[in-house]
Each structure stands twice: as C-alpha cells, then as structure tokens.
Length: 342
Image 1 (tube, rainbow, N blue to C red):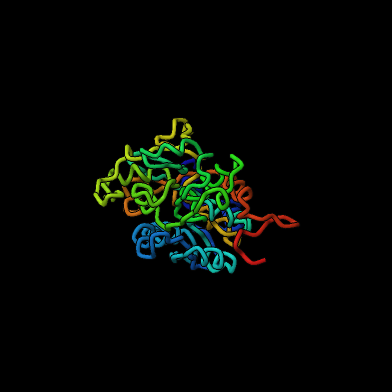
Image 2: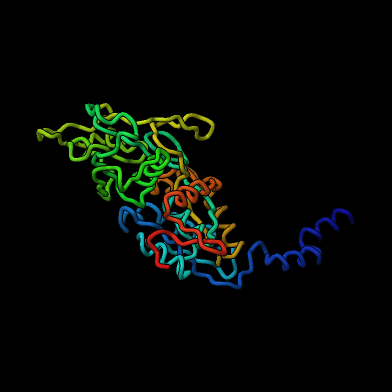
C-alpha cells in the first residue's frame, strides 16, 4: 500500500498542491498569464540599426521568444526595436517598449526618472580580458610636454565623442569637475566627433591637443593596426606608444586590478532593464534566461559578449549625472534629465 500510495501521489498531486499552484498562477509547470503577450525590447543603436540587429537580435528576439515564451500560457513573444538618443526617452516615457538595453549613463537617467529595474549586466571580452566594467582615459600625443595632468587641459583643444557619451565624455568631465575645472569654460575649444576613433586620429594628427576615449580604445585600434596620419601626411599603424595617458590611476574589478590604463572611475557595462509596467513573473523569467546564456552560444558570439551576470549597481552613474547637472532633482522626488523639457 505504501508503494501504491506513493505512486498515486506522484500521478495525482494532492488538492493542496493544486491550490498552491493556482494561487501562484502555475498549472502544469506553465505560468498562467492574463496580461499582454507581445513584449518589445528597445536597444540603443549607437552603431546603427543593422549593427544592433546583427549583434543583439538573436538574444532579444529569437532566444527570448524561444526560451521564455513557452513558459507562459498563452505563450509570449519578444521583438527588438532600435532606439536613438531621442526615442530611447520618448518610448520609455510612453511605455511603447517593455525592456531597455542602453548605455550605462542613459540607463541611470531612465532609472532615476522612470523607475526601471536593472535585470542583468553584460560581461564583455575586451582585448582578451573578460570585464563587466569600463571607464575613460585622458590622453595626449607622446611628444606633448605641455599636458602632464588634468589641470593642464586649460586653454587646450579637447576632443571627445559626445557630451552624452560615458567613456568618451562624461567620465572625464567629472574628473575635471573634481579638479574645480569646467569642461565648457576651461579648454580653448571642445570638439565632439561622434566617433572615438576620430578622437584618436585627431590627437595624433595635431588637430586636437587632448583626447577623451573609452578604456582600451587605443589598444583596440593597435590590435587592428588602424592607420593614423601625422602632421606631415605620412601614415603609421596605431600604437599605444604614440600616446601618453594622463593621471592614470589603479582600479579594482572582480577582485583584480583593472587590466587597462584608466583616468576615471570604473562604471558598469551595458545592461537590460525592465520598465515598471512589466510584471514580476515576466521580468524574472527574462532575467533567468539571460543568466543561462553560455559564452560559446550563437547569442553571445553574435553579440560580442561572454555572458550576463546579476546586475551591478548603477547608483554611481546617477551620482555622476547629478554632479554634472544632467539629472535635475525635482520637488517630491524623481527628476528630469538634462535637455528634456520641463
């Protein structure tokens, strides 16, 4: 009878088990879902729509629909759309997307203003190093003897990719501010190139005195033998030895020294976040699916990443944006991001 009784319990779960399953929305291992079934993931396409599709389409559309969709009844589907710096904010505000994949600085503004929740942080492979963080470097040409520290940037021509770029703009801007300097008032001129490679090329050619780029940008250009044209018109392959980094500091990541020269604070990599209207069960399953992706998978290979890890804190970026004035606190909590209407 004991054996038979055990067999009956395995074939026919007791009433209390079914009751708990019903309360939790679980029937037969499938989550009963009464909300929307079509979810959209918005991704910031800093290198264009085609590049975003090539890199992240398999992860956010194909993999999520395949791995997360069947866990729900009715099944869920996922789509990915490309965002720019304007539509990132407008589609988040209108709730036309459900999840957002963007750079850390923009994400911190979204979290502050709209209450999004970060689900996971990317782990990338940069010049053979697996990393979950990055920062910025301030650099000059190797023969430049006038700029030895951040304070020497005064009255020089400075180049960065963008005022909204983290590794090539904002991170260095904060370091200047900590030296009681203004990015907009102390340099002779500030040029935004929209491309970090152009910053490096411009510093070497003598067009710019000082450059702001992401950690490992120059090392990456050296590995690809990117050509640089000098003042005399001759072309040489990019080498780190052609430049000198300013005010280099040591930072720790994953318990070890950060493997690249760095001038700034370290900040977490890009992340995927859920907007407030997304239910807990959907967010949870998306997060779990990301953690299952292996480095050898098609998703990781196409996305040029190693894995996803539990989300790092993006509070340091909120603090940075508040200090730079790109997040403006409002009465009653929350805030507006710089450049947005009142």
